[in-house]
Amino acid sequence: MTNSKETDIRVAEIFGPTIQGEGVLIGLPTVFVRTGGCDYRCSWCDSLHAVDPEYRDQWLAMSTDAVWTKILELSGNTPVTVSLSGGNPAIQPFGDLIRRGRGAGYRFALETQGSVSKDWFAELDVLVLSPKPPSSGMETDWAAFDTCLHKAQGKPETVLKIVVFDETDYAYAKEAAARYPLLPVYLQPGNHTPPPADDDGAAVDQDGLMEKMLWLVDKVTQDRWFEARVLPQLHVLLWGNKRGV
Image (tube, rainbow, N blue to C red; front, side):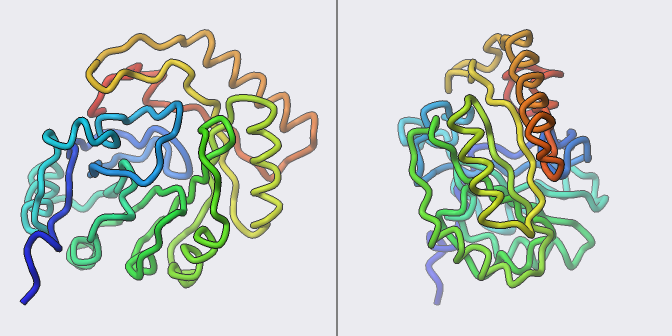
């Protein structure tokens, strides 16, 4: 008999439907399941409330049934895209939830840095692999990243999404794209004013973000890197650093 603790999903928040704010699904109505816990500690993390163990007592251990019930409640039983985020959602047992949801017509997207792989990656509709650039203070384990691709078995739509803060990050993004030439590449300027974990409405330097966006657009066009797509964090432009939107 399986221990319920082994199948519980650690949840920081479930919210929506709202629009997906970034990447390949930008603008798409989505319900978000944000999990608690991460194997990374990025210097500019914008979701510390879902990463730092200091906030562990705010995370709920929820069964697949409970998470699914909440998704149905929020979506009004109408199939919608469900985004699995974190933290690193790849460390959670999402296989049963994905199978149940897809059987009911829901679509599932996962965003992860590519450090942890699971067999259920192959059951996703969209897999966003977002390796962290040097400004994060983390190092990419490309062997682990390759295992994520192997587990996906080429079944979900799979893309690269890389945050760029500076020239060093930009060079890293180009190297990552060259390593995986078959994966579509999405770039976004880094939010250099991420919210404190305990502040629901931290101000955003919108002018600074737009300057970084323009700089990144100029970089890819001057380099003739025409395969890359440069997108903002739409939710930050609309709501700043407010949680749960």
